[in-house]
Image (tube, rainbow, N blue to C red; front, side, top):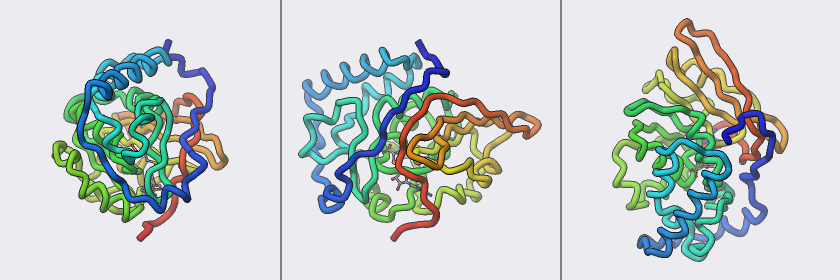
Length: 243
Ligand code: SAH
């Protein structure tokens, strides 16, 4: 059952970040029957944890998550857990991606702003679901790496930006939906401004190790409503860009 009041912590952080900073990503870009089978199991696991939106589950079934992770870890790409990528950052746990995407409650062709591109896995989930995706990353190395990742060229609906998510993307605002995939100490004012009346934002908020998943709704009169969901643990949303 999808139970918004259930309080449980999903850990997005990993312990060996520094080590992974030294590795360049070696990607395997072939999708075998074995991978597909593991993906099916992953989707069933996520479904049993309470994700009911079939569009989200179908997207996860379709995307070869092992493409996004160093080939050395190919075997565990379909375990339901977060995983280190470069720059001490993480690819979110598939359950977390599904949870946030389901809460976002998207409709086809909507304009979605994502803060924290990371591996671009979440951006691809949204693109497969028919969204126009604008995604911002503050780490130059991750931004550059995504530009060279050939699989992502199959998703022209995703536009990548190198910048500070606290500023949003004023040139492209307003957005129907905003999804923040890093832990914000508070809901950033500029993101609220860039949300369309009638729009929704899903964002993990909290200063400590644990954040609460919030869904913000801006009604047609511009009044802000807030709903609180489960606890998670994300990497922090940091100020400014990193070269
Ligand atoms: N959505 C990602 C998960 C990324 S982890 C995925 O699917 O893989 C969070 C990401 O947010 C990290 O890459 C981190 O560098 C980025 N980040 C943190 N603070 C940010 C900010 N102020 N602006 C943009 N990106 C930010």
